[in-house]
Image 1 (spheres, rainbow, N blue to C red):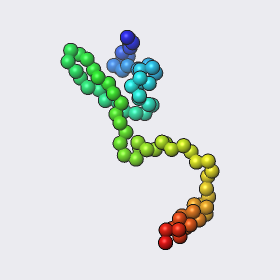
Image 2: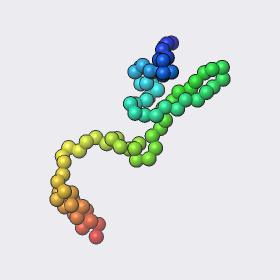
Image 3: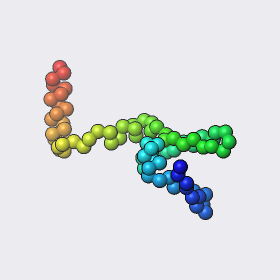
Image 4: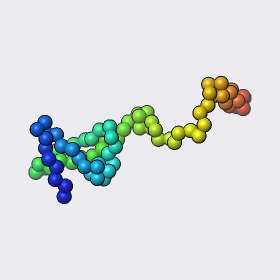
Length: 81
């Protein structure tokens, strides 16, 4: 069991091990539900929309210039005709 201390502002800090167990990342929202007998249930809120996909791909191996990007786009369209 982990014991947490409440600050003068009424806040608690969850230890890293608890955040990892819950799958909560920095900046992510947390949902708290009140259960019977003074028990709280805590879980990570699943990100929605495009934010859920931001950063899910690895960085590209090579950065393309604007001219290179336009060339790739043009070649792709030409192959579809």
